[in-house]
Length: 317
Image 1 (cartoon, rainbow, N blue to C red):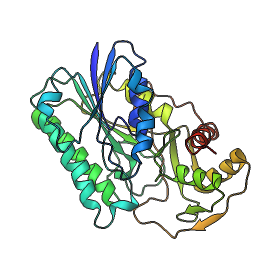
Image 2 (image 1 turned 90 degrees about the vertical axis):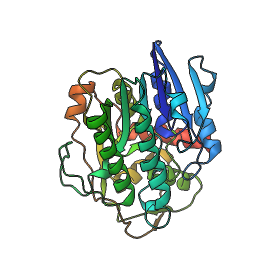
Image 3 (image 1 turned 120 degrees about the horizontal axis):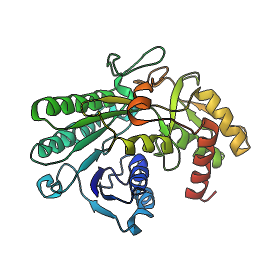
Image 4 (image 1 turned 180 degrees about the horizontal axis):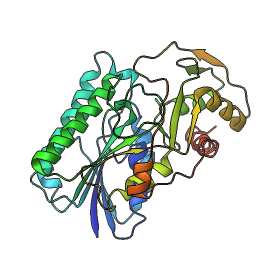
């Protein structure tokens, strides 16, 4: 049996990951989350955990990573998934950067420091495509890292901390870089959630940029299958791996798909050009295919349909 600790367990990706890990009967999962409500209301996080809390092999702990006593929590843990952190590109500009420094950089360093004295077999850190910055064409893991936002800088700093602790302290680190994950339980500050919610309420969509910007959209179910595989796949220690999706598309194309799925025309409220965001993202996932057996299967229309169904139920539309 593997005892697996997941930080950020009540979040969008974290809650799905816990459910995926529990499909393996030999796994026991300990979920940690502080219910910080900077981007997601507490009631939504509680809803994310609803099914997990009744599972016999799941234990939940409401703990802030800046205060947790890792020396008491880590003994007996085989795998650590570190998904907790402060998300969001636009909000990272300005005085709120202190939250990114604390909840991303400081919290990660505290965890890595504690892992020096533990017997964990693998520490898997959830990073982001934001570390790459503006790139043209497919991006592989050897591309230069030039973040466009303080958020991206904070996550790249965490990656560097992981590398240092891996090389100098022997901590078995794996870094996964996510590309625009979407689907049920997506955070309220993310584009698809905002688009769908506003359309369901008959309000204009708040659109940053001109809509021609494109993203490599990764459905959450595909994403967590890859992330779960990282707990047991061979030859991963010290690797950095892109987790991208089945389909790239422009924001305008996504809005057109949502109009089909919801059955109404979207009105647009232009919000100007956002700082810190690249014009396009495109993941080379050949490394994930080779090392994790990764093969995303959910196309954009199918994934958006699932998110629409979820948000209708969440907001009772």
